[in-house]
Image 1 (cartoon, each protein chain N blue to C red):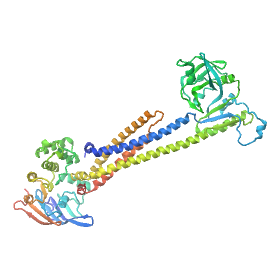
Image 2 (image 1 turned 30 degrees about the vertical axis):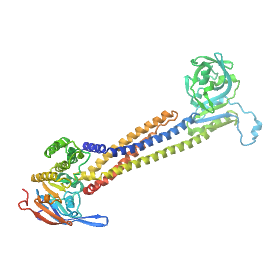
Image 3 (image 1 turned 90 degrees about the vertical axis):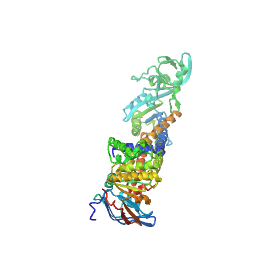
Image 4 (image 1 turned 135 degrees about the vertical axis):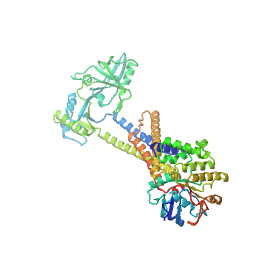
Length: 402
Length: 238
């Protein structure tokens, strides 16, 4: 039998039994669509959690001035009751610690800001140009603070979205001057709306260079130093390196506390693992259901057609030809069902994203491939296996089966 | 044995047993039969006498449990399944009582089926199918599906399909069993015409009138050929 004839015969056989073909394609596409949508849900949940967590910044090591004691009375506390200042120089020295990617000194104060006769109180953060990267903030307008090489502090300010709205309304604030405390600062950028993390919204923040803030607040000490490690594996190394470096600079006195995101990360890991397992479980169940659906329809339809197999053999078809016909038909049906199912699944996920825009319901590629693979393989196996068996029968035995 | 070479079909000691649940049914017992090319044979006998089984054996639709079957001098029983399929395709045409047309295919496509299975190119196929349709008076029914055809037309399609590859033997199992008398008569005449053209014709039937038309009548009982009568003057073909 010629390949083209095989194709045509198989296609006609599929279209010649619309009910059976419809059921099979339906079973197949429901199975695949279920896999695609369910894993899109599961993976969407996973992504959602990841996005929430990375809002705090990743791979962070935080340096606090002062030693937090949990071990009761320490003789050292009697000698040095006040900790040494944590300075910008301390912060900059941390860049030499192996594994450190960038650092951000942090000084915080409350101040008044006023522009065009409007006045309000706001939280002010003094920091450096890397803060925007460490905290993964986004800018709506302009740029972030420039690199302050000399450490003198320039007269620049970045406004939170709400502050900008209250002070300037719809006007473009870039290049305008605002008065903060007793200083006049030029607006260079505006933060995007909705930034959050560490328990406060960035919408009501003022961000200025750390040296400027120190001068304004007349303080030498930093509130925090944020240190970003190059990777998660290096966090512990960075933590001990940072502690050693600062202790050394403070004449051997361990007067700072270094904390990591460890606790957060551990929880994070647990949640991710559970979610990944959950997604895999959902996918496995949907795949099994899809496979069984396909198996049933295939088994029934091939059994019904044993007489046709007998006839083909009586007309001179070899067992190989019969197997080929059924194989081609099974491939056609499986692929059609799989493709329709994938399209259904993707549209379902798209509808989900329309309804809940915050929820990134994208099906993972491995799940789509596994769904398609299972559908096609089970279609083939359960379509061809019984046909093979029927093809081996004597024609008269097959013919007389109903 | 000695006339194997001259025989088209030669059966020796053919046995076939079926198991239906616990009971054992011996459908063929030690069947000996020689058939020359071009013969017209009717196989008769009561139900369950093994006549259909005999026909299925000759048509290679079934396998004997014991004995040998030579077709055109070749030992068929020892052939591999694929070689048997080739013999079925090229040398044997089979006509069933219930026609066994493929319901989703048109009359033309049903007739084309053996050609397609044999791998004959499409152009050649449509030429031969058109010719067959014309010969069997089915040209205006070519694109009808079997359920749009009358019983006689269906059996003509089945005969066209069985003979499209010009087989040496045409086997018909109760070809008129599902037809009324007049239509059955047409079908039998068609078969006889084919026989007159040289095709060996073996018909299994209950119908004595039909059986009497054959030049050689076999009577089967209980799996055995109990009588083998050749009508005078018609003992050999051509």
